[in-house]
Image (tube, rainbow, N blue to C red; front, top):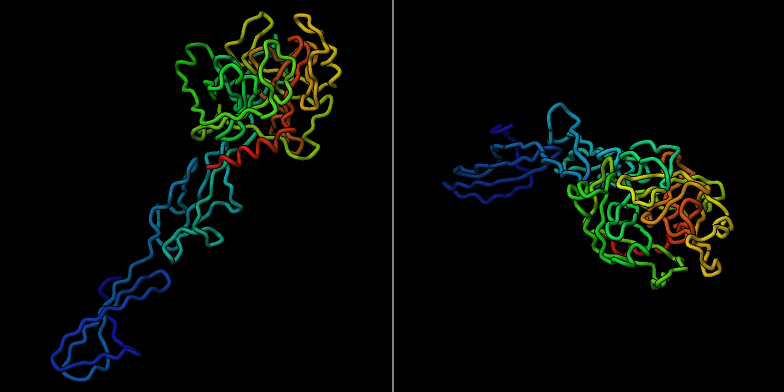
Length: 386
């Protein structure tokens, strides 16, 4: 509405008026979804008893809503309406992100001129990563040492370490977990995410991830010429900027705090990597294996290759023994995740172990037990939040 005429009494307003004077007064009133401006011409030759006003009423406009990182805005009307009481919905780029808010992401244009949620709050929702979900079903058979190739999206958390070759796992869009030994030779590693092939041509077309900081577990021992102690074989890498998640890049879950995440003998899990195969060469394409957890004595009984004094090797409760005597991880797979189905959500996987060491490839291997280090991991991550 514009230029409408209003006549009435100016209640409570006292204006001293002199003959022949000309006074223009303006009054602004906000009501419901309208902002009203009154302009009064108070010109007369005597006493003042009323007013004639003109007003301009402007509908409340909340403006174009802020964009959502890793998400989008949907207008819940045929046109992109931004005036009171228009409604919108914030959505995330599924299936890789999900809203962290309790509601459905519905916001409306309020009379205050701001977009608000169901609780009248103006803060934007946040799209958080979806954890532990393969984007292509994982094969049930095959092995790294003598096995079949993985498919794109089977292990979207898989990280590739170049020179020396190793693996890791994305545990958030900002963090990677790996074995400490992977960083012994090169504390400033070149790492990649989302790869299936790691040959020269594939690496030329890929961009390394920029690493901001490296955190090796404080109880990891200094490397020796012939390492026999792999206790506390775990490290974290913080990325300079968060990864954009998609079909081939997605984080895996950390173990929960309950005993359900302490894998028992016979529990099956997957491990993937580009390490050495049965033909003594490393693989250019990602391979995977499904192997069971074994009692520690099974790993202790493996005869080393080459032969060595069995008593010199250290076995601790910070390790998981896994394998079936044929299928195994090997050199070049170190740091990769040994993942097991979440006991409370069979569609998700958590990182139960990290490829650490073994006495002979193709038998049974030892994996760093990640559940024993969750407190340390969370503490480091919380110290370096954005």
